[in-house]
Image (cartoon, rainbow over all chains, first blue to last red; front, top):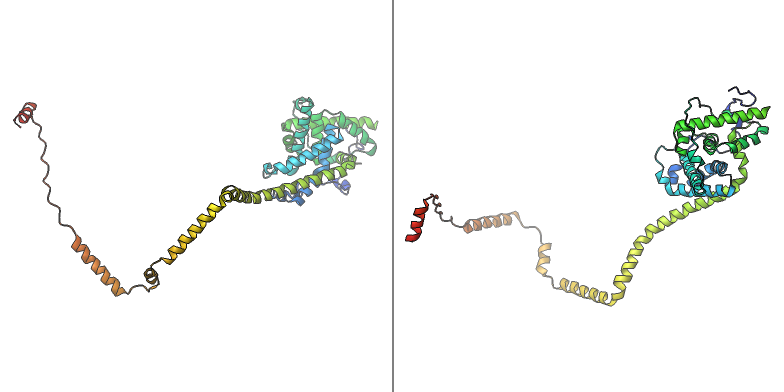
Length: 204
Length: 143
């Protein structure tokens, strides 16, 4: 698929790093051992780091502010309660998003929703390897982007959000959503293809 | 130009104060959990002592006091009745080697004197020879 250069520019990532946003990379030193020891300051730092990305993820799946706030709170409380279950080497971020994802699924189950569980795309694709930072959206396309995000089926939306918001790897997204890596690949592929198509249409 | 991440986070920046409040409540829960854990470990020991005191000692306090007084009296009496020679023996210096040697020789002599005589020789048992049944009957009849 041919993408016009003015829509999806491949720019060096430092152009937007000056913005005041939570860091994406998990290589940052998170005070997880201190949190394990029950230090409130460590928990504050961890929650501060993830509160907004987590809220964005939950909100874009539930589309309800109060529900999202409740789910974020429940996720934080569950994290405090079950941090002992975080295995060595497992990343705190993906673990926390995994808890939030389970909370969203529980909510949908309560409401009788089946979309996240049964909307599977069976085929597996290997060409997915681009970074979320390589996709740049112009100001006038922002509304269209958000609109498209809302139109995507929840499994694709979930994978795309995890990819965009925290730049999680395919393995991490698979672990968070409890799916196969091939499924995550195909979801991301279709979601990105739809996004590019929309941005192309919007350009005309 | 913005990345999708920037767009998404910017769109939800308005929720930041509410998220701060949630974070603070979660951190407060961490503090509460920590304090309650510490208190729990402290209170467990005091609770056991308190229960022991209230249920076992306090209801029969006069009996316990009486028993304690009796035990103290016994202890004092025992102390006063102790043999002073024991104390002297404990305080005396260790015996001289000559004394130890003499004592050892005396003991040896006593052992030699006390050795019992050889036991009498026991007659070896007769070997059992099987006899015909008819002879056996005859023997019993003659007896």
